[in-house]
Length: 290
Length: 309
Image (tube, rainbow over all chains, first blue to last red; front, side, top):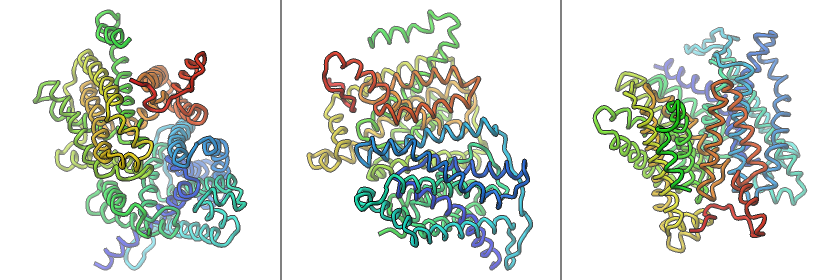
């Protein structure tokens, strides 16, 4: 009984860690840069495929490729914001109009990224195994790579938290999240800060994807959308732009998914939506929200 | 012009040689046109971006797949539409209180929720994943779509010209103000959302008969959510011709490219989308209206409802 309980608790935590990381990136893009980035999952997919390519073609282990890919994806996100969303922001007459336009633009981005990936990697399902040996945690057995993903997610999340709290740039990001116009009037270089946020969000998506690919899941260029949905749900659960909330939301969703799929496989996605719909209707500001 | 179009469409199967291909192509175009038009009925004036068309389309498909054996054709299609109307009305009256992006997120999730539920139901209760369908003659499906096309055109223009359409536009401009002037905001939104879903359900129920096999993945393909939205935005939403134009151009492009270069088609689709959103905020219509008004020197009005009765 205790082993069963541990199994569920740890399994949920392990899944939830990556959910949280993905959601922190998504929350940053929507909460600060005001872009509801439907293409978020596509960068998760790209991260996963980079890990696969580097591992199977060049023999570079995923943990090393994280270090290589992080600045690369940060730069991609930064540039995308500059050439796509920044012109939109300046041409939209209001924040609400920008939110609508930027979301639709992110659909365009989704199609572009996904189909470039399909052209490069093709449709077949890929996968690799890495650190797949079992680890015994008080009777519950998990593979090492899942432990690694949890640890890495928590480290990345905390590092970003410290960055937000402790640095001048972090302060500027928090100011922009509260009110972009007021922050600009106070001397924050708003275009740079918003582009930074988008870059960080893209980076976290890619790192999430890298970590995800380690856990022997199947990789396809069309896998992104379901992770976008998970990110949306976790963000609604934890509250927008709340890193702690994202982690709590991620763990809750991970637990629920793990419990439901052990009872009735195939319904875990449905369970996510039920939680999501319920929260949207009852408390759209999230469990930690005011 | 409308009558000419009607005559052209009705006569099409008779005088076009190698008609089966043309008929199927035009049916496909009509499907997207109706989806884009019915999306614009609700989302155009109110500004609520719904990503749920696939859910309503799929409900229509399933209604048709379940009932087509036992009931006459027009009735099956009507039930498909009504089922979608009921779903949309119920969902709408609960969730249309959500503002802006939260509503969009919700509708996005709704498609997946319905798809997963149907999938689970089919696997665990019915014991299959897909269903075989006694498919109809392409010409029958074609006439079905022609009828729905004119019905949706009629409904759109009636709604636009009525007090109801005025109420919708006032909701889009300011919801509080609309409520204060006595518009029953939630009811108007839910009913319109239902009407727009009704036509999507009709389309799903009709198009279903063109296939011989369906499963939840094809019936609720997220494509049916994205395409109509993007087509309507590409075309514009101020005049009725605009979504028709957007949908026609894209479905022709799809027909040309999709068999040979499917990935490049979607890539071009995405790039066009980005370019349109950044450089042509009112879609093709914005360009056309600017060009038409150039000589007259009047202001360019491409907001929804620009076309005065």
